[in-house]
Image (tube, rainbow, N blue to C red):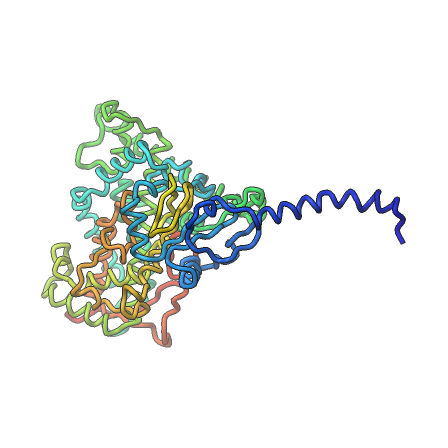
Length: 510
């Protein structure tokens, strides 16, 4: 047996740190959290020491959180590591967050991922709420996303949709149906539209598209360092930090080239005069603002690149995602496909293509888009918010600096709001005034309030125009041998189909 002297020499020194760890563990378990100091916090599921509820967030967070909310309520408080997170899964609670208390919840939480990828919060989507954000949003909306500007891009949209139709026609003959990778073509089309209106010309290539896809995937990744700072080393071991650095560097290099190309173009204009008004793209306008001291604020090159990235990444990814899910659901529901085609072809008559004037009459097509956004919101958890002061939401106390996640996916599938919510039924919107503009909180795929997406009009007109022309020109069905489509979702901030959308097409006899 070990002598008492040896015990004192070897074992007793180990008891001190062991006892200290045990005390810390009990303190974690027994001490009230920041939010528990309030007398009526929202209900919470049980949590583990240190991790809190992190272990309950699965590979499909919107679905995991929806399942938890069914057990613990539509307003639920989680603890992700040391961070209190309020999960909102009802229209009433969302209305309080994004309308009643919109100002209190207008801030964005800090995140290593966003800090690295969007120029230290210099963009519009993640900038802290304040004067800088208001100025940059004003620039973004007035110069790119106002109704007048969106209408001015009509020719670009119609040209790119015509190119898409011509490309598909080139693959097909009326006698032999051929398969088309629709997901790939939707991504290319939205990329080309956004590049032309924001950057002045098309930019592409498989490598660039791969970088953009990884960028969006990383925006939805989990950083342990954000939630448990002393576990930040996990992000290094897992390769997250390396991926962030690589993607940020490659995107920055691309954006540098875009800006320098525009600077050189402006310098080469005759007499050194800026490009002619009316032919300026978004980058030209930002460079003009940079030189104009009368605007009341200044922007530097980093800000210009951050705003370009916002326009490009957000405008491309969410727009094509909605198109992909819409065609997926129409292929799965042939009756809805036939009804949409009948409407489009009746309104088009003998016209060779659908124009934007035709879209206003296409009630069923618009219902298809709404039903797609209800069932498959491109960003199902929207972009997180953060409370700036203590407040109450649906009667519960919410502490300052609580992170807020609004589960638009769960709200869109809430059986108390929607009949048969898991079914794809565009008809539910034919006699309904519910819209996605941010006023009806049962349908908020673009968010609402100050932090709602400003690009709704831009995205929807592209989606409607593309879908109408595809239904007008072609007959679509599942490929031979495919009984049903795989509906597995990708991971990331924006949720795509995990596997390509392949469909058989034949040129319609009109």
